[in-house]
Image (cartoon, rainbow, N blue to C red):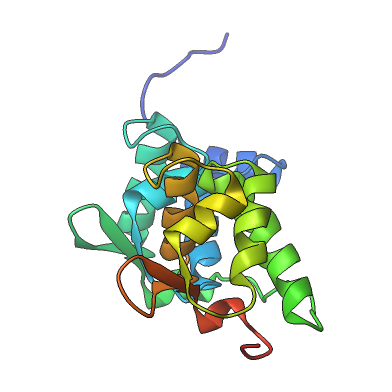
Amino acid sequence: MHLLLKGKKSPSKKKAASAGGKISADEKILAAFYEKLEWDITEVPEEDILTLSGYAGADSRGYRDGKKLLLAEGKIEKTEAKIYKLTKLGLQGKPATTEPKFKTNDEYQEEFILKRLTPKIGAPEEKFRAFLGVMKDGSAHSHDELLAATGYKKTDSKGYRNIMKGLKDFKCLEPAGGRGMFQLTDKAFRFGRP
């Protein structure tokens, strides 16, 4: 006869689930930090961690448990309200980069920026592609030019705002040349500005 005892789950069950192919909550959260590191972003807002790790909200049980474990293990730390960063211990688990080798800015922008960011920013790929098509010359462009290229009517259109915010969050867009003017940052031009 077996007795079912109530109590805390043993850490070995978590490790076993992870070893069995299912990604644990703490691994999903660490992967979000590692992705941000690829963009040289070290302090990550909780909203971005949630988005990148696939959790709907900070009250999701898996997210809460994973974050609590990482804090307890000393792999992440809170720097200010709802902003976290990896510690030295957390950085030790970072996998070697698997970034493909690109030969041109166009290849880099297509594969690394467009394909990686499209699912994260919440705008249709064709509109994001049109936006990058204008910006890839490295010059400053106005909202009017960008709106015309993407087909959005106003700067407060949700998709347009998402493109602007997504590129800013990943440090690929910056103000330039006056009010309402923007350009891609040097980060978007791995092989030098045109």
